[in-house]
Length: 324
Ligand code: PBG
Ligand code: ZN
Image 1 (cartoon, rainbow, N blue to C red):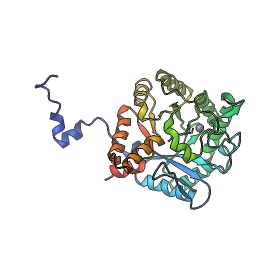
Image 2: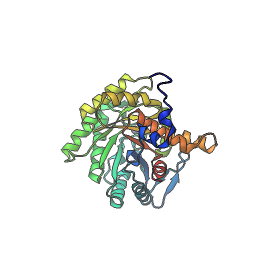
Image 3: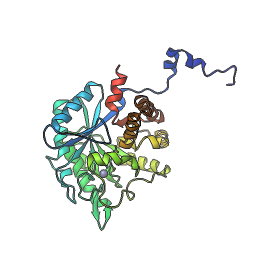
């Protein structure tokens, strides 16, 4: 493969041939849209660092879900902002909790849409950690029961898939067992398998009001310096019964997506997180980059690295563009 016999530009010259040799495709089918549910009526609180995203009351939430469905986006993932927080995150597994209500509202309005729920406790605990705190430490095993209870209550409300994001050890097995016992043996689990302790979550914590009130998440989320450990996490979740594994964040962790894609046969999701979205939106607003072009390049790169599906705040913007 040497010049002048081989000229890589030959397959780049004709636009049709460029299309034919393209290795990666983006399609609205690849997207999962995150939505934030809050109580009240006709509430649409803008999330400052995430232009175009809002904390939505159920009426607006269902309308947005319908809009997403009409754009060809197959799935949403719901996050809740509860009215009250307490040490045991009671609002996370209450039958009439905000996510449980949101699931029903979306399923009522758009039955065909796949409704996924984020299963975690951090937005519901008064201390803001993803599990139960005992002596200033997050107690792994005590958290499992509450996470499992949360997942079962989402399933009972009609969720089509649950996505545990807490990073407690053994939570996939605990959730699988609890779902099966409650008769939800066909409900898939998408586990946040390799979730890093990332500063890219900043805007989300503002959106979901889920920042830890003391300390940080280093004792449960992964160290950004580790790659081999991500493989172990993915394998462990697979063996515990995960149906889809996820890498999060996406852009600074494309190597992790690539490695898990090679070593694990499960469908793979990547979370293009809030900070990744905010950076592109901010630079676009400054006139420093072409935000639309950078969005498409970023989403393509995440697919190229090996992700089957992308959780992204760009889902609607990108789907609109792809549908043109
Ligand atoms: C809750 C959760 C977080 C995100 C998804 N689920 C925040 C965190 O772990 O602190 C981040 C999503 C984003 O930044 O877009 N555990
Ligand atoms: Zn959490």
